Amino acid sequence: MKRRQLVQLLGIRLILSAFSVLLVPVHAAHAVRQKITRRYLRPPGSLKEVDFLTACIRCGQCGEVCPNRCIKYFGIDEGVSMKDTPYIVPREKACILCMKCGDICPTGAIRPVQRLAEEIIENVDMGKARVDENICLSFQGKTCGVCYRACPLPDIAIRVGMLEQPHVLDQCVGCGLCERSCIQLPQAIKVIPAHTRLG
Image 1 (tube, rainbow, N blue to C red):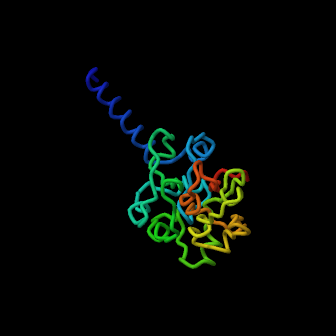
Image 2 (cartoon, helix red, strand yellow):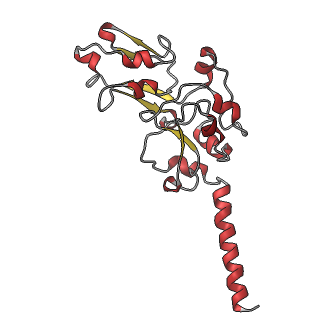
Image 3 (cartoon, rainbow, N blue to C red):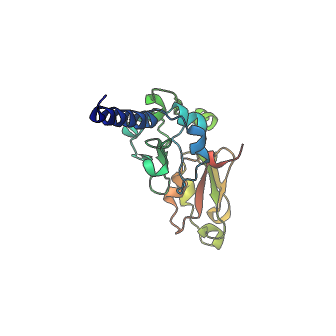
């Protein structure tokens, strides 16, 4: 074998091995442990993080069907296993719980969920909102209530008390509409992503 042929063969093997790493998410568990610098949510109906990373084929159909255009995709900076997986940053654009992403997902990484309150509460766990009472206007004596009015599940996921003080309930699914609508800077209500919980 000539040197030129050997170099070409090695080059082809190197390209093929790099390409196969991008196609097969074999390091899903490592990606979950990897430190991602931004706080993000997975689309509604997504499997638990490790299972999601294994099932997602990075086809991009969920983002294409999203009417609110809130679904983005990770780049290579977050690691090969996270590349091209869908995520949502609620402060930028929150999920409106249309549930179209689950209907179009070809692998079940995002499960189909009917757009009924009971079904959404039962099958969607993007995270849970948390109110910072130290900066929330309603807890500072000024009535607000914007987060409550933005919630697609009012009195189920969030209720308001005196001066429209928000209280997040256990059935919050973490869509992020409350966070997106908060007029306070920094926002007084944030969604803690489900994938960051231990256990």
